[in-house]
Amino acid sequence: MSTPLTEGTKAPAFTGIDQDGNKHSLSDYKGKKLVLYFYPQDNTPACTTQACNLRDNYAILKKNGWELIGVSPDTEEDHTRFREKFNLPFPLLADPKHKIIEKFGVWGEKQLYGRKYRGLHRTTFLIDEKGVIRKIFLKPRNKQHAEEILRWENEKKG
Image 1: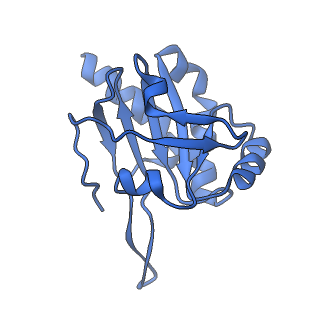
Image 2: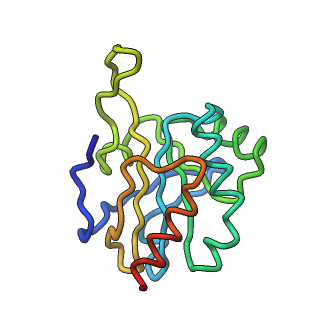
């Protein structure tokens, strides 16, 4: 799986609603670094592992200047339950109509046990202060995703 977006290009403008009914747009994060991570579904094992890894490392991500937003096709209500259950400190955007998901090109054909279907490809975009995509993780490591982000940032500085 790949996204039609590439590193070094402007991130698509988006607006979405989080679990509390608050609106978030890319323009709200101008001047800030943003981790925009797309995941298939709340309360599934891999998605929960990834979200909890980001939660557990949220303070160090923030210390390094990163804002964090999760996006999935789930509803606001699903996100509220997921966020409360796992004490997630970052917003989760509900995108059941796939508006943001399609803009970032992370919806497509998947395969599980030989069966093909359409679904969301777990992908993370690191967006800089000017709205430019600096890094795309096509297959983030769920148990070590925050570490991947920080390692990339350190290598970039190095």
